[in-house]
Length: 152
Image 1 (cartoon, rainbow, N blue to C red):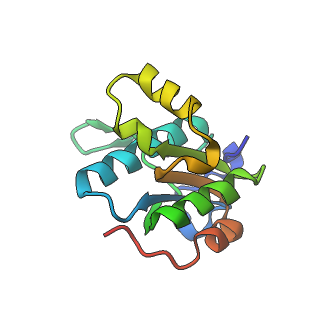
Image 2: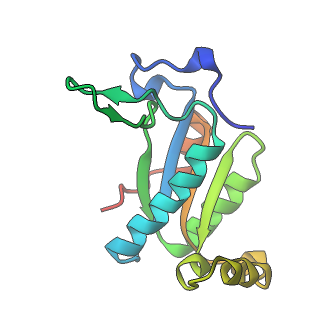
């Protein structure tokens, strides 16, 4: 399981000093609303699955709580459809990476069971992805995403 051990969590350190890096790569051709949805959905799956990813809640001067955010940061990048598919395949092949993805079918169905059935009936190499979230050791993640641009 990919994640941070309790002694690795350091909210006083710069994000670049964290052992693990988190990136979300989104299909650059999606309209803004669909891109945001894809990124958020993969981030939700990632934050639930990766230990120690979220920092402590913030408390403002009036005592109001603001739920914890990723203390080590998260970079949202853009890629074309084929690059997204390659990134997902390479990341999924690494046992030290966590991968959450959003197949296009997720945004083209309105009932979750229909989504599950659509993915089950599609060969892996034919699945198009709208977003892929990857958490893994910093240097290999950097090599995986290369010089992809920030999602604009």
